[in-house]
Length: 450
Image (cartoon, rainbow, N blue to C red; front, side, top):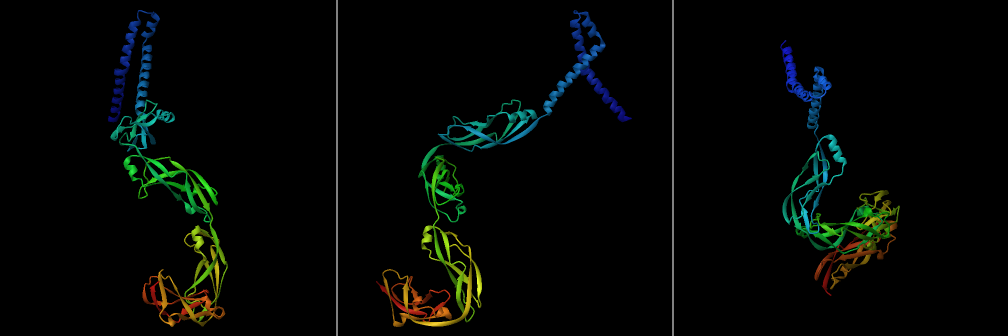
């Protein structure tokens, strides 16, 4: 019952409110209009004097007032915001004379208004975000960013809207130009870059003085990936970018004039065919020796730097024969020596045959000296220090096929000076299947001034 009474009171209040503030004022206004027109036609007077006419006109005016109020409230309620991210900032100043730091490259703009207005703003051209630095002198300045939009019914907010910039006088300097080769490992391994020639030796760098002081070098960055169908010969790359670096290899942001150069790259394919030399490592089982070593490939072609290729005579392949007592096949992956970029064969098979071992002595093998410093002479103290007996061990077929001239006994005199010395004797031979040793382990020598 109480709830019903409350509802009735609310309805009465609403009716009373509309009657007092809407219908009654409108009715009074209409009556005043009638009074003004009483002196006119009787038809209008008679029409407007009817209560039904007054009621209809009052309702129409009330409805119109409601529509107007509702539309205005819709404008207030239908507010929408959208963020435009990463909008470019344009600064207006004398770029030939000054450098500006601290100005953001991009800002975010929040547009506030009705959806249809925001949609139109996004479709219509805009002058964007700008800041006018004209007339400002070198130093620190707090400046305001501005956004120009053709739709005036929108509000906007910039993030940031104000920034502190530093203005420097622009100076210039000349720097020598060098180059770096990027992604060189992706070049065909059979090719080699011999040289790079740039179309200029130096460039001009511009910027604040403290920035120019940081620049240690300016480099042209030559990217191998920009070379299409690389092959031996000269190739020219256009518009190679330039970058300035400090002493620690960090990029320094300065203006470089010109910003790019042309580079002529000379590419070659140095190669050489060399034999494979198998070097056994370790001692075979007692009483056993290697009778033969065969490889699936006897020679390979190596590619790389010309100076390395000129010096290399063979490609050494090591195999582990420690404890070996019977024939064995090895699959070996060939290793590229330093300076070699490619090898014609990647893997080879090495077949090792084992036989019973014998030993044979070779007497009166003369001792040679190596690595004696220039200006010195060396002589043996006794006749026994001039020659040694060498013991050769291996398969009977191999041992019996060698000659004394195939054996070399020597002493390494690197680092020895004037005086008498006792030096270790070393022995090598032409056949890696054999082992060599001197019965005399050390000899005595005298070194004198030459």
